[in-house]
Image (cartoon, rainbow, N blue to C red; front, top):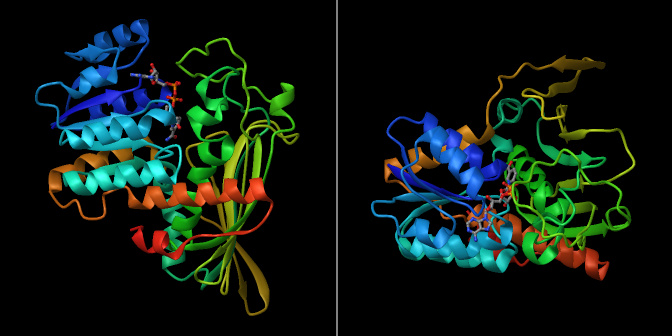
Length: 364
Ligand SMILES: NC(=O)c1ccc[n+]([C@@H]2O[C@H](COP(=O)([O-])OP(=O)(O)OC[C@H]3O[C@@H](n4cnc5c(N)ncnc54)[C@H](O)[C@@H]3O)[C@@H](O)[C@H]2O)c1
């Protein structure tokens, strides 16, 4: 299988590393604007073709599939062009700037009859998969409430980068890390539909220069214009189709413990669970709570490391090779984009927003 990667920042390099690990996959081209980074990657991985512009990579003879790991505003144009050329596409998250663009990508995948997958690597973590197994085994009974979050004290990607501009990124932490949280939380809850959202977003710290991550390793240089017109914190209360609720938080900047943490708490009729990951540790802390004849029980659960981009890329390659592409049209990721749109609308208008039932039915 001959593949290419567009975008050579942290995310693009995860895709490159993963493709290099999979037997029978040949990385025949890369594209990215940074000449030096391109030259280093070409030398390191013996890539036969490299381009500054993504348009040139898509023309490459024999190319069958492409990973898209560029600033979010470019996901839809590149994906649609690639699908129309008959390529299979693995896009980085979030799928696109908004639900409308995501819908265009899904339509392009369906018309072309090609795979469109989106890199939600966190749900493939070993600890998340293990928790889902415990839930499937009935340890929590019927889950009806979850809190899920990804919170950083000072984690705003470098000032001046595309990340802090709404027209290039689609928003701040809600669409950046919150979309991972939404994905893994709904996965853990058994993929219920989201019926309504009530969100608030804040930009009180980022706009005042607090919260920039000095360690941020964005490959694209900022253009020197320090602009911050996205939120730095979002909180959302969601009502789910199955009667349950989900409370989601995402921050790039907040006066809280230092570092970067994500996780989830779930409550069910038979038990509860807490999963917590500190500073990207490979296996987070996972605990199940219950009741034994009136006495509280608490059990720590071991999990294997796993997930990361290799799992996502491997699944994409396996899907393409299998020829069974049913359900791999990006519709699930597009539905997450519509939910995020509804959250921003709710925050802007300071009211609860109901998701349109047709869009829920169209998601797979
Ligand atoms: N799944 C994850 O865990 C994860 C983690 C980080 C980033 N991401 C996502 O990956 C994407 C990229 O993020 P990043 O942090 O790697 O960004 P980055 O800014 O570090 O890198 C972006 C890359 O895109 C390239 N690019 C920009 N315009 C281009 C063009 N016209 N033609 C060709 N290349 C172009 C840049 O040259 C650069 O190599 C984003 O959508 C982000 O949300 C996902």
